Length: 275
Ligand code: SAM
Image 1 (tube, helix red, strand yellow):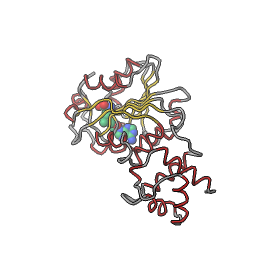
Image 2: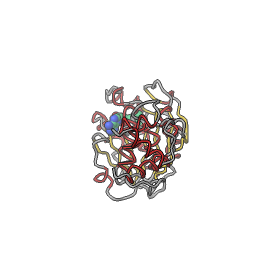
Image 3: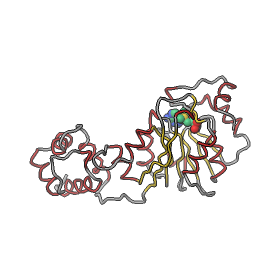
Image 4: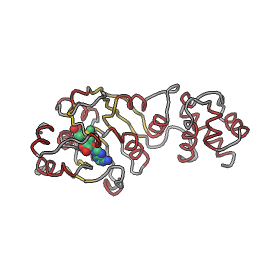
């Protein structure tokens, strides 16, 4: 594939910072990221933000079908020309956050591989993991700090790590230097591989209540869990103490220290109290 900068120059397209347009031009790094996805020849891949198509071409070689969603219609003539001879690549023009995934992929299993636009990383992860059909795996390049927050363990947990780890097992599988992107971003990147579970790893009566508890717990930074739950759920201190006792959680701890299983125990206690 042609270098993204040359392609954009040829079509007089300027990269838009506001769309997270940092194009990965190094073929070895692109291949390394695609390898991290461990694709099979029979796979359907959803790519978010194909840009000038450098990664798309590699995916097309290793998968049965590539569905690529791109927001920036200025890239349409470039991709139409570059992929004219490809029979297994389909482009959709629109915002990934607005797309109906069920309509896009139908009921076939699929995997996500992408160099994500960083300005909406969390929103994209949330959308992909919360909607049905869920991908089997995600292999996504994200800002290094975000990748570290996603894989965090108790003591450093956040709503992001709880949300991702409820749906899948995330690993950082590669580091990516900012110098392989044009324009060069201010931050380094990492490749996150997430194996999505068939069923959540903890026992919860319903997902909405589990996330309601976690959101309440993380609603007030660095507060003791008993206070953030009382504030976030609008409950009295007495009721919160009962819930925490039932779930065997010390109310003076902070949300960052809590394990997924403890959020689940709290959710069960809340439901058992009739909420
Ligand atoms: N895949 C290319 C690469 O590896 O060089 C480009 C990656 S660039 C980091 C992110 C891409 O996402 C850009 O092409 C950008 O236009 C696209 N994008 C930004 N916001 C988007 C959205 N909401 N939906 C779909 N694509 C989006």
